[in-house]
Amino acid sequence: MLLLAPAPAPAPAAARRSKVGGSALRVRCSSLRELERSASPRPGARLPPLREAKRVVLVRHGQSTWNAEGRIQGSSDISVLTSKGESQAETSRLMLLSDSFDACFTSPLARSRRTAEIIWGDRDEDLIPDSDLREIDLYSFQGLLKNEGKERYGVLYRQWQKNAANFSIDGHYPVRELWDRAQNCWERILAHEGKSVLVVAHNAVNQALVATSLGLGTEYFRILLQSNCGASVLDFTPQTGGGPPAVCLNRLNQTPNSPVASGSSGGRKTSKRIILVCQGATQNSDEISLGGMGYAPLNMLGIIQSQKTAELLLDQKVNGILCSPQVAAVDTATTICEVQEAADCLGADCVPRYVEMKKLLELEIDDAFQTKQKSFGEIAQSGWLGSMEYRTLEGLWNQSKAAWQALLNELQDDTSERTLVVVGHLGIHLALICQSLDLTMEYMSSFHLDDGSISVIDFPDGPKGRGVVRCTNYTAHLGRWSIPITRTTETDEEF
Image (cartoon, rainbow, N blue to C red; front, top):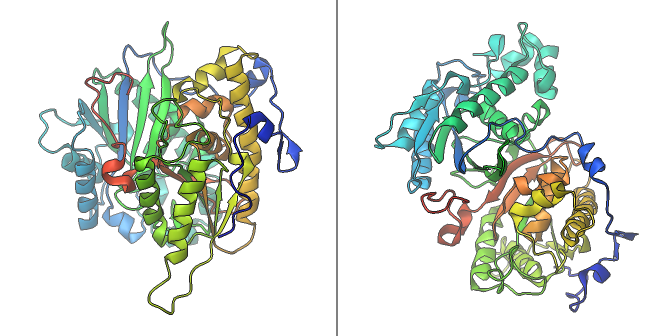
């Protein structure tokens, strides 16, 4: 284990971070016009206004017979759940058992409807079928094995693989049509009077629902992964004076199985991976809003969270660990490192695995940054460019750009398998998720992370290609010490 330097003594964060990676990172006050020129729309900009807060949980159906065969399903209705798919749906039912859902929308296709029936159980309310929740229409491709698609359609099939947003078949643009359908679905889902709504559908349409809720276009197809029976949670908060609600992706693709167990993303093999680990809870997490000052040690809950995360990563061969120099991050990273290095020891003649651990100054978060997550977007859009809050947020954002580039450099652009674990405060991880998706600073409030959570980003095309977000805010590994995937909304209007 390599520690580049001991944790520095407490000092003003601005002074400690006067130079990062050899270049100065000065807090800069940019104009509001610069934000407005960004290509990214405001999150939730096309959604209908709401009168009260609403939570929507999206679940993909369990494994189907055509999933198992490697056959292209599209919107066909021939395949059914396998026994594994039924078991996955039952696990999802248990995972969501305590949630006070008011309604369940479902795709009418058999594989989705059966999953919905298992999860919904004996609740009194009827399922609400919606044809726009069916899977993406793939026309002539439907029913073909994937290798048959390659053989019969050649260039057209490669376009579907490489440039799906502009893919055309039989006179249709499937992904564009799907995005339009997802937008229509939100009109009906958000119009329902229920405060907590379950939606059971499919891989592509759930991707489109997540993306359109955040105002993201078809270029994000295959970027926000949806695994069999993976659950994604979206919170919608009404805005004062009307207008589209604020949207927060509370978590993406919480799966019945470990999110680090598979080496593929959306069916594509990947050899490069970044795992973002939020440091455990600190002794003063209850006193300030983003989890604790930089030099607060882990509390007992945080120690347990770090141990649970180390156990989750035990089967993942980690090549390197990068962490913030702040105490809680170093302690969390050290626990992971020690477990990794002992992973191959079986008996007296074992050879410990060496895992390089480095402190990365770019991952440090300003001690004065005590803004709640839900106000990130408010600060970015407020226009108070000279305020302390805006300057601090902008400093964090600029810092995250350098941090993200440093992480990509660590991945190495070659054919070797490489997994990096990055440990830090949830504030810097929110910014890193936005950097991975090529989003603007205002999107930081569109994601949520909890202490001890992990988020996984895969790079099937290497670090120079686009990252695929496998999951965000995964906490199932924390067991009884985790934030539940959902929670009752009866007495918690702001979730």
